[in-house]
Image (tube, rainbow over all chains, first blue to last red; front, side, top):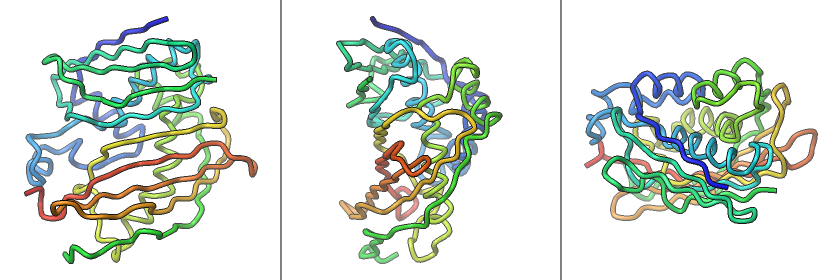
Length: 116
Length: 134
């Protein structure tokens, strides 16, 4: 079973995730701070990307309760306006995840999920 | 900052975290999932980072500021997924703290139990920009 989710990231979504997760690192919220540490502007939380990857993985697994291991590398920055396509494919208890931006670059790598 | 500063091996106090149903629901909505569908798996970042962030950022001798932290890798291993309303206990330790080409790499491991039983283990890898990102 495979699942796909396409998301265009917005500042509002990133701010909502910061509030809900409690991760108020200003590099996700304040362009001036983000630029002061060498970033091009605010970036999405890696954990927001991982949360969306887990969402498609849970759909492919037949329920979030079945997830037992989830891992990934945050390979490229995601900025507001970027569109990321998350795909999860279930291969007998091991789910492979890909997350590609609109340029076809992977934003998550080494992403995988084991289910019960 | 001295590039020799390392806090590898440092362990922090256990922290009790209740998975407040309202916060779990807000977290689910921020990911576009149904709040009635249980605790989103990556809510684990809330109950593990709670055990890490206040201690490591509040520890002046650790030399780490929030805006200089970049999350590079994350792994969660669960025995089971928790339920909204449960209280868990999380404890973090610094498993690695090394420098490569002027960048500081931290690995933080967090063990989470519920009612004394293992629930989740988190391995977070972060880099710390030590000179304003240059």
